[in-house]
Image (cartoon, rainbow, N blue to C red):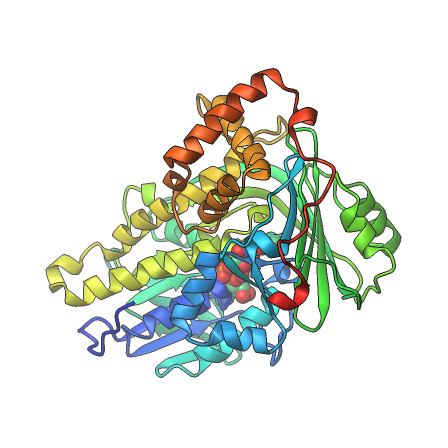
Length: 477
Ligand SMILES: Cc1cc2nc3c(=O)[nH]c(=O)nc-3n(C[C@H](O)[C@H](O)[C@H](O)COP(=O)(O)OP(=O)(O)OC[C@H]3O[C@@H](n4cnc5c(N)ncnc54)[C@H](O)[C@@H]3O)c2cc1C
């Protein structure tokens, strides 16, 4: 990212709505371009790594994909090292995760695709600490935004109306960023200004995560993350154990279409025992729970298509879950946010060099460019979910064929380390989907597809044994 010391006219104050990861990363990016950045957060902000009311998902497993880890490190140099020094676990995706996916274990190998394992609350707390020290940035907790302010012609958003500890207040800004998460009122605020509402695309999955901390046992397995995912459309239950800071395991059990894990300790374990593989339940047997299980429901993956709206005001953008909230089982949310804030950084740098005339339409261009960033993760996540007949959402023509190809590609990732590496690189957003189109991978894919016509899955799949980590072990981080 390029730093601009100059604050051109019109770059005086930016306001960010929401102090989650999208809001914090936005504030970091804006701090290079605006004299003042005010971040407004409805909650009071905890002094430590605690989950809070406005971010209920923070109590559940959060994996940070490689591109997200790199973006964080670029924005906050030394952050990843600091996280790990204080208990987060560095992980190599290929070596340290044991992943049973779509009916088979993924290949295990040293992938050099690096992740960091910690709780979402710990990550947010550390990032917030960094943002709080940035010159020009003010964090204002207990401030809830109620409406957007606009100029008389309503063509430009000029600030926000907030309710804070001192009562109602109008706060002016040249740019307002709505990063207030899935519950964002952004579409209602735009409607109040006469812009109408965006198209909403949804895939209804009625998913819930139920999660609980456990003490990590003294004798450690050869994985840092154990994941058991179902094969769609027959299987509906998921489970993840992830090492997190504090010598703990965070365990999240998920279920689609109402198959939600119970919140009592016995029911939680019984649900773990009902997964497609016994390893997760076996790992928990005898492990000491450190908290009571809590549940979070995710009714749908949802994308608000602001980029398609007929008109758009200057001075207002949205990003993060406020625009697109994905099914969390693919762990893309935080990384997609980092891609969005990277886009914002690049566009602001270009804007700083532009003439006042060419600055017009910045907000609208941002929403359109953001939609391009969102398209691939949305496609990946919803294509998989729409394999379930119960999933309600738009099924484009040819979807069945694409799903068949995708499932074969997933099968291949269990048999072929090269295919698995490529899949991880795409999943971790090192490459777009084109990363799967290498000649050698295509050759393996075609050979495997032909085999699949003649050999039943049970005879093709490595479904019984979790492959060991290559030279693995917990201490190799
Ligand atoms: C169960 C679950 C598991 C997940 N696992 C993963 C994972 O493994 N990996 C991954 O990358 N992603 C995961 N995600 C997705 C990830 O949590 C989200 O993409 C991400 O947290 C969204 O961040 P955000 O900042 O956009 O919104 P949020 O984190 O929801 O933050 C919004 C903030 O805005 C504040 N706010 C709301 N309204 C106002 C207002 N009017 N005024 C002021 N403040 C306001 C809220 O209090 C909150 O602090 C998961 C999600 C869920 C639900």
